[in-house]
Image 1 (cartoon, rainbow, N blue to C red):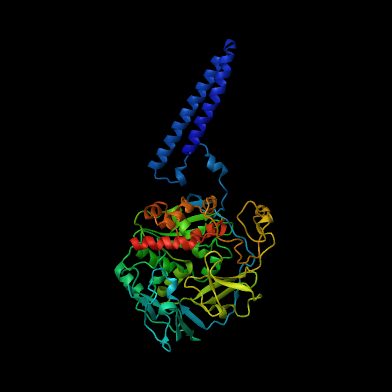
Image 2 (cartoon, rainbow, N blue to C red; image 1 turned 180 degrees about the horizontal axis):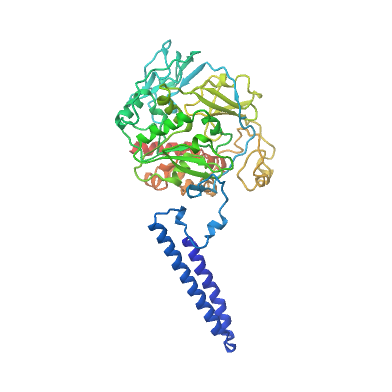
Length: 542
């Protein structure tokens, strides 16, 4: 029984005593006063014996090495146990986290659980995707060169040991430049039969960590890792405190990770084995505690500490999971890696090649939904060719909260596992906010359709308002299941107050964690952009 239950028992007895004693004193002539005192004394004596027994039970369990969530050993169940949400039988309740804050954006157009065909011939790697990289990296290829999958395309002049490599084999058809001669993308026309760079693989069982790091750097696998804080490719000399993998995505219309890992169980486990050699702590794998059982590849994974999460979005965000498992403290650096990238990492050791093959979910009401088997950085126009049913749409590499808008001549992002197609929001409804019913998803209780949580909507890109005064509403805290005050943090960033930024938890956040608060924001503030500005300021300060 928890300490809160103890307090509840004692407070109940106290509240019971006051009116009873008052009543007894008023009727003391009839002997009720003496009887009441005896009853109260008896109850207090039983309460003391009960609490004493509870403490002995806790101490005995601790001495025996028996562990339970919250050390919740008790003669009687605690209040939280009585009202705790029932979890599926396959969930380890001692490692479960049930989150209440957040909001599920229900949209029409889930990707159908089937693999559909797509003729994709062009692929690209885009330097600007990687936070902190120089806008003009050192390019190792020229137009017309032939490359194999895994060959070096470019590297950052500040960190030349980290190589960025070709996702496919083929001919380099264009090195596209942007403003001030920056490199926008290195584009490749893929071979029909893929050719792979050969590796001399180290033995994971006997090689040292420095040898493994040097191999991963030369193989081009280092950009598969992501460092928190700052969301950057980690420095080569860094040893992460822990490494985290989220096995599910709770974002709108997200790809089903069970489809992704099917047939890739061996590569995923090989990736975990590599990760265990890279961290001084543990590899943590977060599983979905919803009604559907996770895939066998996740359930049977070894070398990981498993955790279960249930709740609305952003419960699937790795940043939220880190906060509840092992929060980032002080100068700690942790790494994260997606399921797709963990599989790519594992394939280097299980197949001996840099194979970026992956499933991309195509979702949205205005597109033929499904999964396409392709490679990293696929051409958006070729991926969606013949599948879009409405010409007036926006194509997003990623989900609607954090994704990047792409045209028919652009490419998917390095870490993209879904493409979302939504209607452009350039049609405005009459009377706007005066009508108490929204035609799209809303987190506002002022709208009548908020009562129908399972109702799905055909969303568009309309923001339903414009930027206005940055007022305190309490909305952000409801959207973020973390012990952080996001609105105070945003204001600290805008004021450039480094001490407050750090004290308010900026190092625990990434854009995806604050994206839902941006969706719900009445003031229409660009919270993700503000947060990125703050993270870059903190990184510059060292």
